[in-house]
Image (cartoon, rainbow, N blue to C red; front, side, top):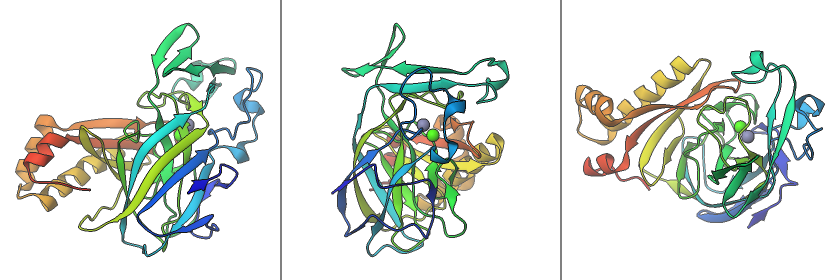
Length: 297
Ligand code: CA
Ligand code: ZN
């Protein structure tokens, strides 16, 4: 099924009207607007000229039949096709270097044959999904904010071939995604990656035998617990604790052993440090988890 970019939301909200009701497993293509809702078309369209009520759209939401609060869904990202050109911005006050930026600037970034042209520099295309999640139980959460429901995690591991596991909070999940990046560095320090419109192919299914409080992503190399919190310290600490709990729950490792193993071969990493909450992940190599007998979908 094809979900048009015209069907989009600006907040993950249990009261959003679903654009489709789907039986699981399902195969979907989401067409997405870029994070500026395609308001940037030339270098004169700088950050302060934008209507901020239209920033960070997510396509959807879709209602997944038979899914209840407390369930976990697996979203397998099959393919991401990005549309050229990408856009980047710099603006006073925006991002980690905001205080050093004196004038706003927009960069239009052509993309062709898996190459992202940053002026004369050629960067390899590495498409990923910035915003992806489900509706929260309580108040609506703007699509620009990450959390236990997913949202604006800006995690470079959410890419083709990856499977994202999301804890569902409301009946039907109300799943949506958007904010594609042609390439983005960990941290997203200027508040934008190479922002692009595009299309994402996913399959979604229900997962049994997995209990998680926060999103978890599996790539071909690693599994990562993803946590968002008011500070990066808190996000990293909680992601580390989540991984330790995951290991002690699904293997026979003691907390001491799990901790030492994580300290030996796990990585505390940054997703983004510029959104209303900061997002961190703790990764463990997939081959180590396989040797421990952990196999998740
Ligand atoms: Ca984002
Ligand atoms: Zn973005």
